Length: 298
Image 1 (spheres, helix red, strand yellow):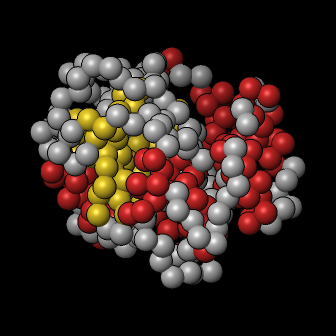
Image 2 (cartoon, rainbow, N blue to C red):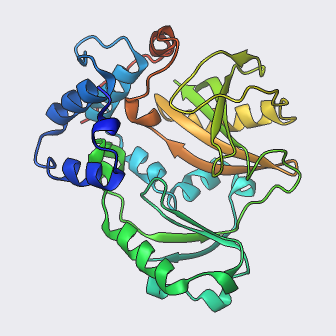
């Protein structure tokens, strides 16, 4: 069902989902899966990776996941693993936009909420930044709790805050912005890596195995048809990803490689919210076969 064609405005879709907050998670997940995937959800004996992500939302509720889904508190987890050096420098933590002292910030920075997705403000010149609009936008994001939209339990109990980080820039990158390396880890082992490029211009995504062999997999983002060279620290990034993933049955570890230095991005527990149509379809089963579901934690 092409629901995005029926309701094209994202804000409208979010509002409609908000009206269904009263529905129990299990019922809502069944409903969303049918609408987005066009098929019934099998929770009793899930085979597809997407199905197992839905099971994961409902039946594996480890408090450590909430800590690590929080973009601020995850820093403590990464540090405890011995990876202080890959944390993006932090300029500030705030409860509301009005607390930000823009005068004390450098010329360039990034503002983001600790519980959101796509809630980032990239500032390349603070003298040109509309500070009042920025404060208003951040406050709106802090008030907006979107975790229940996809019934992603790990985000339910995050206290929304605002963080300010150093802006990562890669002037030598052949693509726009910075490359985002995403390691899909299952039972502590990296299985595949995908790279997102041209994130804010003409977003593209390619999938690779752990030796950087191209996988002919498509998702909701178009593929890049050219050659993307193998990162020279791929093995080190893989080892870091697996260290950070070892406490979880399934997690995606996002890393950046800029000027030969690795930076930590985030940990994501519900890969594409479990509503991603892979092409070819058998990839959903292949990845699902690797994801051995744990004992329930409720």
